[in-house]
Length: 326
Image (cartoon, rainbow, N blue to C red; front, side):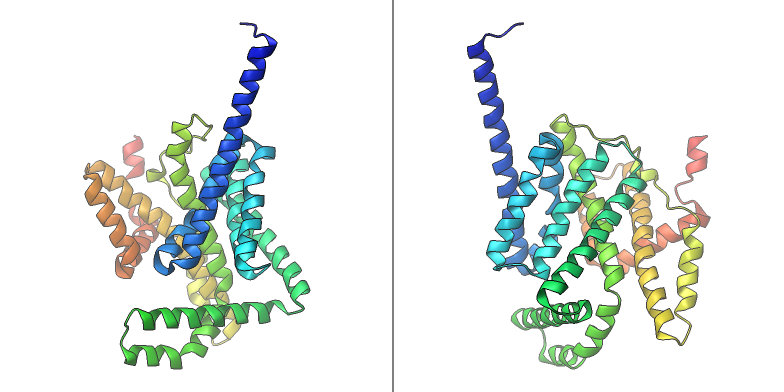
């Protein structure tokens, strides 16, 4: 059907109005999540996981050029709130970048492993470059910046524990051990960066799937993630990292510890896939599933059991995948 000049103008105005609305919505949602994650201690920690989500969704909906506006303006707003460039700004910028990169990779229709691996690699490399640039501006070494940042956050955590009414004996014990905690924490930061990036990527990909379907956006067919398995070669790497912990050399211990933390995260994904597989198989009610998933998130012992489930699945084949395929 051919449209006249007036009808075309109305259509273009409607499209422009919808695009503007999406841009404002994306910026507003991102800013709200950021403010909550910044000023509400416990809830904010979990909200920070979802900072990439609006950028991921609206970049896919609006396209590359228009979708770039959201993370740029959101970063400027964050800078105004925090009063300038800081490590916190770099952290939140990397989260926005992660959402943008994930959207770019979804359009390439890659496997789930390549999508997460490429996204994490891109963001981590960019983060290192930004940190080097920031250290030059601040005229401080990277180690000094990280050490200062860790000290500040440990003191804030200790203050939070005091406000929560923790026993004075426990507060005193943590306070006296603060330097040792700081020493270990700084040395496992490489693993913490990789682990957090992996986990946030995985979480946002899962959460975005339903929204993509509802908005008729392109979402790759990753297959059933309940059947996902880590490459078998990782078993030998995790065993090697465990052996490194037995050495007296501190460098070997640090390398082994960082490697174990990263690989434990990967086996957590496999373990949670097994759990999800049997939840689906047994047709558990959604409320019960929510309770059990919350238990996994909040209870360290249960979390370790899930990781162990993923690790030993290499030999035990808990889901009997080959049998099911036949």
